[in-house]
Image 1 (cartoon, rainbow, N blue to C red):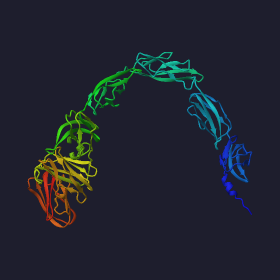
Image 2 (cartoon, helix red, strand yellow; image 1 turned 45 degrees about the horizontal axis):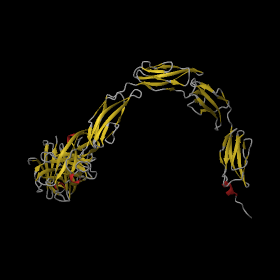
Image 3 (cartoon, helix red, strand yellow; image 1 turned 60 degrees about the horizontal axis):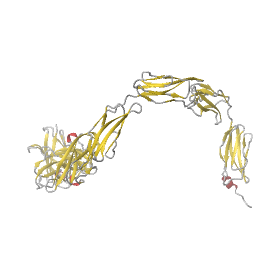
Image 4 (tube, rainbow, N blue to C red; image 1 turned 180 degrees about the vertical axis):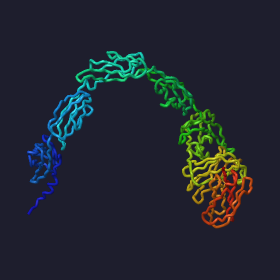
Length: 635
């Protein structure tokens, strides 16, 4: 016996399309045209839904009366079906179909429970439950009444106006000069003109506007028609007489340089213009940039009454640089003094010499232009920028920086200048320090001597010393050495590595490297430097961390400065007794005691409140330790 698999045919001819419609409306259904061609459509109840076509893969049915019916598609004896629902349509809408703009009419429908809506609410609106239509704008809109199930009736409502056209407007200029006239027109005839402020502008019966005084007046056009009286209006500005004022500014710069022009006493907003952008350009804010040597005339053009313009001019001279120029670019806006040096290296003395400098006060910007013009000979130079210490905010300023972003002169980019050239764009980038807090501290001294490398010497007073993070390169703090050549940094985070760098323009400085502060060793007080006056170098004196003789032991004192109490901390390899002494700067012993330093990490607090404010030396002596640190007692 042979079997025919009807399930495959059934699955290939499902009916898709609309499953509902309204009485009197036609809906569409279909089957796959590739695999299901050749079938016929039928309805289970043609008094509810009658099919419009009996063949083809696309079918339709029309709603006859409310109810449900089964739409079928039969192919090769296999029938697929789709249940459809026919919803009753509402009755026809009754009421007037014309309304004036700004007026209302009422529409009704005998079928209850429906909702009103408008096709274009900018022309006509309708209350959703009331059927009250309000004319908004001249034109046509369809009003719909929709009952549950989605069936609806509609009617087109025409909105009329006293004006001849829905787009009727007042035509003419929106400005006029004092004492001058302009003519306004409107497409709808028979109207009357009026002005809201006749002291500013008057208008005649023919639409002739006369400017009387500076200001704004609304000119109205009023007509009376089938929909009553209506008005449209146009704001008219009476502009003042134009004046571009005068320009003020430096008026000259070098190639690559800038200066700012400003306009004063202009009676309107203007725009900058220049006839020779190959010589100088100007931004919308008045910043002039020198492009090439020559003369230019920068203008500020102001448009006032009507198309009348006035222009203020400023002569601009762009000089050949024959030198080096660029910008000092800071990563945050700055207020204060900045100095830029032009530096040459003297190989015979192995030192730097600043041959020129310039200073300027920065008003909250992050860029400052510098230039060194008229350099007479071909040579190699370096440029360096620094912020005045008195201009720094708090204890975190900008690290003195060489071109283009080096902290040390022997690693910076050298500028090889050719006589007669304009070497522009030699920028110096400066990073601002970051304020810190923490238990860490680093101190030391800078002493001056010859080239013997000894730890003694003459204190170097007032030298800037910087501490910065070795990973980020950001300055954290800066200070000056005191009368004894000592310096101290506190409030440093632990768990980081730091560099110490004394700053002297004509000395080659070697940083004090890799000072690693930890929670067990938060302090370093012997980051000392030697300033060699013959070789013009500054080098660190590497004596081991905290002067501790045993490489397995560390010791430190913090906070420093202190207002009275300090903590002596250690990490010892062995347990031993030590003598702790506090001496003044003349060597007198002010306090002394013996303590037991147990192996491992430990600490002891000392009370210095009985001493007067000033600098003291705290020393710790034992069989393996010889520690000395300067402490600043601040009261």
